[in-house]
Amino acid sequence: MGWFDPAIAFAISWGAGSLGFVALTIRQGFALHSQFLERQLVAKEREQMLEIVEKEEEKFRTLLESAPDALVIVNEAGKIVIANDQTDKLFEYLHEQLINQPIEILMPDRFWQNHSEFRATFFAKPHARPMGTGLELYGRCQNGREFPIEVSLNILETPEGKYALATIRNVTEQKLAAETLRQFNAKLEERANQMTIELRMRNEEIEQANIDLQKQASALEQSNLELQQFAFAASHDLQTPLRSISGFIQLLQQKYHDQLDEQANEWIGIAVENTLHMQQMIQDLLTFSRIDSPTYTFETIDLNEIFYEVMALLQYELINSPAKVTSGKLPIVRGNRTHLILLFQNLFGNGLKYNDKEQPTIHVSAEASDGKWVIAVEDNGIGIKEIYYSKIFDILRRLHTQDVYPGNGIGLAICRRIVERHGGEIWVTSNYGHGSTFYFTLMKKGENSG
Image (cartoon, rainbow, N blue to C red; front, side, top):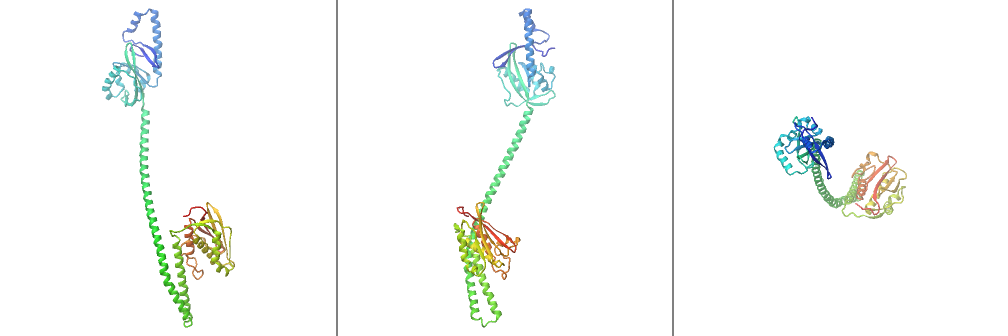
């Protein structure tokens, strides 16, 4: 038995216009081709022709078996006449089980009926069909297992008739990879859509938060305005009766001093002192509220000038004290002149008041840092415990009783509000019992103000 059974002699186009001749011999109980050669050729020519046929047959066999895909040649009747080893392996058949069988045994039953019509059309109007044409095709093994395939078709025209050359490729792995990629892309798209929704929701939340902040800012601005208006009104309405009370008490003290006993005069003195303290507290609260005025103006200011103006304001306290106040070279900054004077005045005043040394000293210095000026006001006073570093800047916060160190607990709160209004910060360090240093930052000349 030969490698294949039918007798076929035909020309095969290998591409690029080249043409190879293939003669295939089979024996099915008669030798039609051999008889034809015997009638046409002399013995020597016959031997040469057979030799050529055998060589061409060997070339064709080698070519067929070296192909990576399954190759099947089908006649016009739809019977398999040639199949390579890859076909046997792919469809799990023995070679002899395929030859002379209808091509439909290699496909699922559902394709059989339409395939006969397709085959007739292909042979009637043959045309090459490459792989990857997008058709959903399936092959079927001998055990009935199906698997996806791609098929390319070419027509072979020979003296014995037309044949179809089918190249069949198993694309199971490609399909699995494509499905994996599809699922991955689907998950990626789903995640992208989810993230888009989350981002939109967050943007809406941020937008709503901004709207709420704007409303709160507007409400706060309105509240501050109302507070300032209240402070102005309260200042006038409270100070007027206080001045009246203080005046009458002082008049009572002056006119009836000799008629009152020592305790009564002491009580009147306390009343006068308290009314004066209340007047000062109201005035300080009014000053505190005015710092946030929307008409706050900034200008270029030489801090050396501020230093000397404050020294002039403290002239009375300094003349009657051994205190020494000095300054290094101070910078030019952007600020509000009135409030910078008040800032230095409060810090100098605290350095002199909270001091138990024979000669109180205060020194002012400045250095540049991170685009701003850091101003330091150092004293040799009583110092501050570390636990109070941040608390002393709260409004109405006092660390000492009125009889030990008089005051109303508003001065440092005013200092902090002034510095913050200038876009800066204020803090303190201290060596308890030996002195404190107050630091605050101010904008350099030419910087934008808050």
